[in-house]
Amino acid sequence: MQTRIEKISNIKDASAIFAEAGEILRGGGLVAFPTETVYGLGANGLDAAACAKIYAAKGRPSDNPLILHVADRAMVDMAAAEVTPMAERVLAAFAPGPVTVILPKRGEVPASVTGGLSTVGVRMPDNDIARAMIRAAGVPIAAPSANTSGRPSPTTAAAVRADMDGKIPLILDGGACKFGVESTIVDCTGARAAILRPGAVTREMLAEVLGELAPPPVVDEKEAPRAPGMKYTHYAPIAPLTLISALHENLSEAFCVAVREAKAAGKRPSVIVSKETAERLAHLVPPEHIAVFGGAGDLPAMAAHLYECLRAFDGKDADVLFAETVEETGLGVAIMNRLKKAAGGRIRYV
Ligand code: TXA
Ligand code: MG
Image (tube, rainbow, N blue to C red; front, side):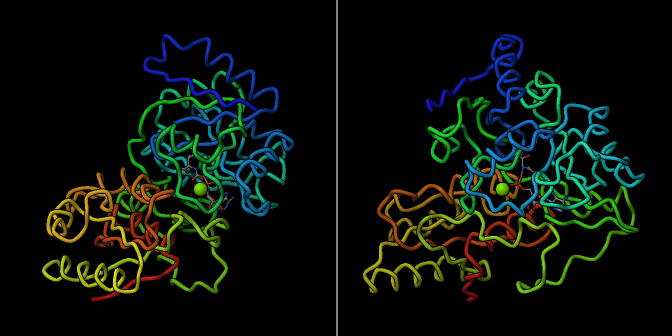
């Protein structure tokens, strides 16, 4: 299959492309599209056969449920049997935006789409291209991130192409994604809202709207995760990644030690670091082995560039990676959640 990329600069000039995307989706095909978080791989969320193509294209385990994307509040009712008062508050405050609410599912949503669960994730993306495409399709669009299962999520059309070339007919190119980490998933079915996956809508922001939330889950890799997808290896670059956690004043020295050790062991190291650390490593690490994900402490920039950095050394001559950590507050919770998964739990504390 030929994969076409359609660059969309102005949605007003793109009605023919949206009509075509809508037709592909209604016909049971796949279309990749931009959102404000990461690119999605879309199919008609009410069509089990269409959604089966998503699992095949990604190599995704079939028990990992998909979330349904809607264009407006009215469309939420096509996916959810009931919108709980808690969910109404989350949607009123943050939708369209980087948040997914878990709700009881409607009977029309196939069980294979929700991994057999009686609940469904619903999300209204804050991206004009995404919502115009969903409107053109006229149905909720099931969409996981448009990466091969286990790989970093794509935040550009080129990254989608790297994983999906030849597997899907159409990629809508809306440029780089604004947030760069996937939506916050909030379970709104219980007595208290529970965050199943951290994202750009932070715990603090949700607490302002909902009051008390369920406490964050104790991190135990053996325990059954509540967002089923979180149990799989995630976001992993090709070369193994180790995180380096150190006090600010020890950070560049810690990276120097790690890089020298790796070289002494005959490895070719590359690093993913803040601008400040990159400057301090310039004498030791050539620029092609450094990916900068933002200024130190600039969490929005670091989130936005995180996945591009995790993909930066794929297919290059790097066989070990080291990455800087961030403080686990606010958006830093989401960044560290993805970094730890990308590193498979390998952290060096200095
Ligand atoms: O920002 C995002 O959410 C992106 C963009 C494309 O919208 N999508 C995304 O989808 O990240 P995906 O499939 O990569 O991640 C969805 C996560 C998975 O971990 C899945 O297990 C969880 O949501 N999930 C889906 N339905 C669920 C449900 N009913 N209950 C609990 N977790 C659910
Ligand atoms: Mg994903």
